[in-house]
Length: 264
Ligand SMILES: Cc1cc2nc3c(=O)[nH]c(=O)nc-3n(C[C@H](O)[C@H](O)[C@H](O)COP(=O)(O)OP(=O)(O)OC[C@H]3O[C@@H](n4cnc5c(N)ncnc54)[C@H](O)[C@@H]3O)c2cc1C
Image (cartoon, rainbow, N blue to C red; front, side, top):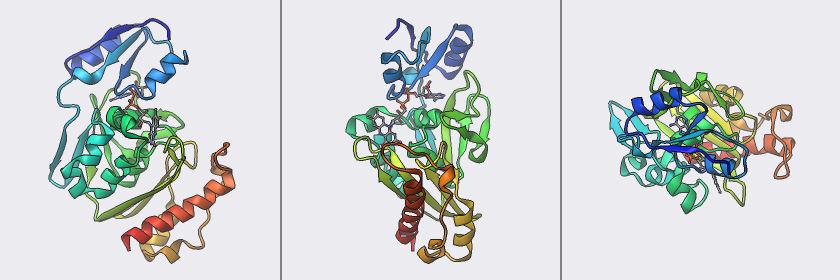
């Protein structure tokens, strides 16, 4: 690890002002991605801005059919929140399936979404539930948010403060986990909403994406059989030692069918 300066601001404005003033700063949430990359010397920021001292960033609120979760909320708090369990049980179940107890107690929803890891679970929920990403400067519709592997539309120094989820009619998430890390080899989030069905897939491709062919089929006939003939293009899939591109494409349909079965 290279040396860096440590800062712990007590407000969003102070955090953003620090980021702008400092030479090469980075925000720290739970550190579950950032600290390993610092220790491996894959990143060398001059300054680390710890978000843990900012009040309100870990709040969970439900009002007017919107569930709002603060960016610094730990996975375990989402998993065990009675509010999340009652409004969007699929979201609390997803959080309960992330990593292990240590990861769930330190990793945060905002860190996961800002990081846009291709195998992370939350991006599937955020995209599947048609969420809105709230930052210090704007609100971003999720269909605009994820732009690629470890890439989002967040600008330099832009701070994700909360994620707003409209309550779906019903939702389910099914993943085929990596047996060691529990990251998604493939994870499929399906939501039935007043505007139609949304299907978001993580783990399979460089970035989370909507399976529009599946959405169209499920909007006509919400059944497992509606997905039987759909196979996604293996050319767009990731390939690594855990799963070939063809296997990932196969898992997309299998996981989607299981999610539909949970909702039928
Ligand atoms: C062993 C292990 C197993 C894991 N298993 C899973 C799994 O099964 N499923 C899964 O989905 N994830 C998994 N993770 C990832 C983990 O759950 C965290 O969500 C992820 O590492 C992000 O960590 P963090 O929230 O601590 O963010 P940090 O590491 O602190 O930050 C990550 C990045 O996001 C930026 N950032 C953080 N917060 C904000 C913000 N509010 N606004 C703007 N930028 C921000 C930081 O600057 C940094 O670049 C695993 C991690 C580990 C180490």
